[in-house]
Length: 344
Ligand code: NAP
Ligand code: G4F
Image 1 (cartoon, rainbow, N blue to C red):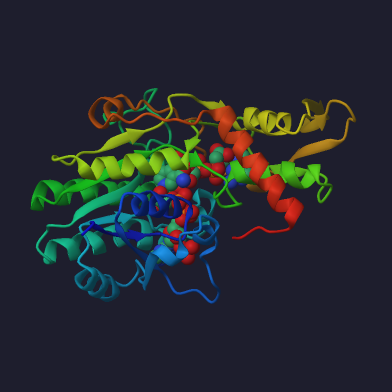
Image 2 (image 1 turned 30 degrees about the vertical axis):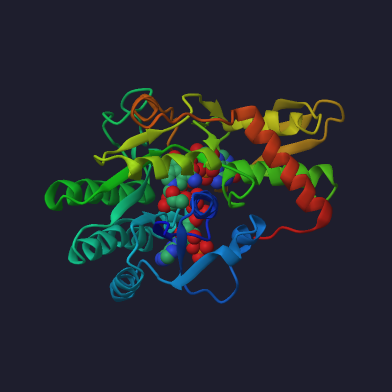
């Protein structure tokens, strides 16, 4: 019989791709979903894997629930992907974010320890823990300096995974993943906001996109490549932590330019009375305006990862580059807008 995996956050971007990946590897996949008032499995349906997954009700806020579920399922591997994952929201909901992204991790680790410690554990750590970066590029040795309640909460979860590994000999790994995107990315994140906006403008459903800090830079990869790395980590005999990144960094501004290029539109940045906008070079129409509401109280200005350890020890490297990623996202959003089917 194949291995059994429990994925928290299965309804999210990474949970959906990881499910697909593990199903293809012959795993029996269990997905933890929190109770919501409406059906929230659009991504799993879009990948056509909903009927291949066993969904179980589990909220990271509730330890009794976590204990019962893990004891009953007896998974070989637990992938903890559930989180309040939007940095901006964490400034408005810092306590809730800590409850799920920090303490939620301890709830799972403690459950695994109480059940004998034989379940392998993956923690979804993040480059946001580097925040105000101390050196560049960032690797596993780079000091952390989180810049948001999300980053601070994730850092707690990260160190808890390390601590349970060292104190209780748990097979716990943290993947320090840099930004990864896809057509299944949530629409509040900047990449998807841009690609959906480009599609809506192209199909004349919208006139412009409002954005915040265009100069922020990120190391953007493809989510489908990154879930592979999660699995590879848990297959290693000795657990460890790994940075997963492309090693290339681009600004939000460059992302905008490339996304419009994908629909044969050239953007020109214009400064008018100190106010910047992105205009169509051909028509002069404003396609991007700046709205300070999207600025963060404290910003992570740039992130650039060095995934050498993952390359050497896991034989992992990204397959999809920046341009292909953007084209893939714009194309999918054009289809969605054209057919008026958004899925999630
Ligand atoms: P996502 O699309 O926002 O998915 C988050 C998932 O967590 C959703 O399934 C959500 O369920 C679930 N969730 C939230 N609160 C929960 C709770 N209290 N109990 C149970 N489930 C809960 O995030 P993602 O992009 O797939 O990221 C996956 C993980 O990797 C997250 O932990 C994120 O912080 C981390 N990460 C992401 C990136 C990235 O660039 N994508 C980079 C580094 C680390 P609902 O569907 O009900 O909301
Ligand atoms: O797309 P973002 O919201 O992603 P952010 O904050 O980098 O966080 C993502 O990546 C982390 C890994 O580093 C994950 F841990 C986390 O869960 C999440 O997946 O913003 C990216 C950048 C920021 O600098 C933001 O200020 O884009 C800038 N930005 C500019 N205008 C905007 C906007 N971000 C959003 N969401 N919306 C805007 O209008």
